[in-house]
Length: 295
Ligand SMILES: [Mg+2]
Image 1: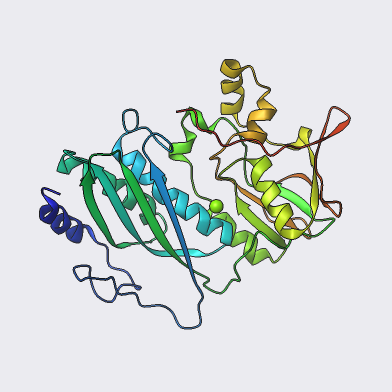
Image 2 (image 1 turned 90 degrees about the horizontal axis):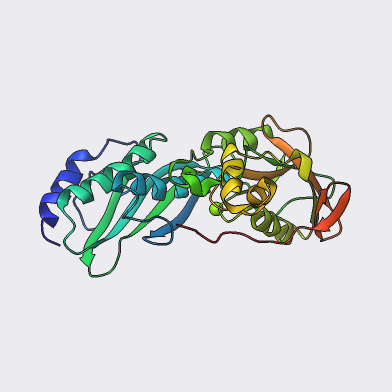
């Protein structure tokens, strides 16, 4: 990639000091100082131009931020603390140096919120569209990871915030619920957790399948985002359907033994494995729709 050395030199100068990085970037691999007795959680997530964002519409700073926030949201779902990450970027050939810098700054802006330094990565250019990947390292820091598996009949089902209509813009700008994930794990009442990346209806299905349980959702209690109402004017869907089936809200979906310190209850876990929706006095199957992008 032309300007690669200049870019890498610039990136090195951007690096923040961190307790996890005993040796600054510049070698063939990054070196990480891991706190003794802590588990290391590893996640990876990639975003593709035309699927997760549109480089004709979205600026590189926002694209960078989104990739990092998706990874941070997975940390939130496991109740771990983001510690460090590495990133790769496949640029469209001919992209100016300023574009790479903006992408990097977007990644870093998001990671800085949680003191999660970018400790290494790779960059190259090709004839295809932009592709960005982040691999994140999370640490348990005194709390056991919360898994998708673990929901028990009688548990309450909760979400951390209103859902639906993220395609109107929130899918680029959402806040990962890292602090909420930690608080929930600290409370000791959470039995299972996932972040809503695909859609409530799909991600709830994952929780239920992994726990060998079912669920009943009370439609009237599902918090509907103002964006879902806005979007329904264009799609003529019910705003509730956007809340149930839209993707990329990145709120946490979790189940609890007792009332948790935060969240909105939307239903209850059942022994019967069916996933049901109670709406207008009727009980219907809640089909796992969702996550098709309409960029
Ligand atoms: Mg996830």
